[in-house]
Length: 522
Image (tube, rainbow, N blue to C red; front, side, top):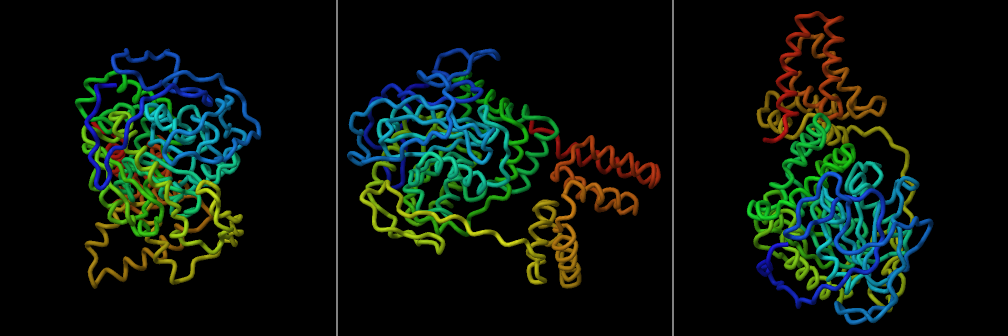
């Protein structure tokens, strides 16, 4: 890496004492590997370079129903643990056999409290390599890969909550009940979701380069359309400018190449699913219910989820602290590793000295046992989720809200906002009718998937000559999973049965929309 970075500036939080990084202990390695973060001055790895992690690692060992011991008695809070035997090599969980879990690895002593660290979209657990030597002296570090990232099996998850459920299922299988959590970007979203839905599992939280809402739903759905049409190369090519400051990218070409290769080796379907999950993620109204000690850490030059988003988190989460890292963009742990390590060390060392469980409201389905002897024993046992009743048709009062939700998901926020902004006393009842019945009833039915409904809608619009709605529904078809080639086939089919002139006009409209929606960023 570059020379020592400037100390991180924090709001009510300063960097803690530094300790010299020690060698990594044996750790689990699994699946096809991505290229490691290169050391400063190293040449960029070639396409055939053997992927590796920073520091030594062990040979993969298949893991079958192996439960990693939960946190044992702890030493001084935030200080080094007592001597312990090095952990036996542990292979990663294989989600191919259990797709509801995640690929993971451990670093650090087996008897230390568990600190879970989550990655950003398009990265692997290696984005945290430079924090591991220091953090693993104090905690047992659990890192995981998102589905389809870093060689993990490509079992796409539909939402941030589903990713959190898979993480908890993985930790449950390992006997880990209570843990600290730090996550970057979508990894931070997963941590915030867990703190809201399972507050007794999360002892302390750090949200790195994260946000209560990531941009707009339209932005992420368009990103999914671009990947579905062009593959991941456009995302790989633009990753360095999103993730690093220009000066760092120019000075560290090997790290830039490493970042590009991480994106290129991600499964496109899982990347698209993650984009859809972020498009639907919005916890702005729920921030006040996060009751665990929280650090919000952001690079001062982050253009993706920058200081403005960080301040929104701090303003909404009770007693949250803000840490601003100078000279860093979105992947601050890679760009300014020493500053990030210091801030995480200080936060988790102090936050875990307090047992905040009494301040966290116990949900109705949670039973609280007697107070634990240490804060790292489960504070509450989470009862099995109650069976979900069979879905019922929405009541009339529900249809408008349901229709608004589906209409925005299919047509996009920009389109719906434009329609609403032009509505007046004369047209508002018509817009409510459309929202309630077209979107809250027909588009919300389970009989057909949205891809099929888009095919039918495109055909009906061309056949009836109502091309004024074709542009919006071409965008919707792309968001619903149709490719440009499939849209072309739909229009060819309508040419046979609806006439060449109608189809010709439709091709002109659709061509313009497809070019706009699928052209990668410059």
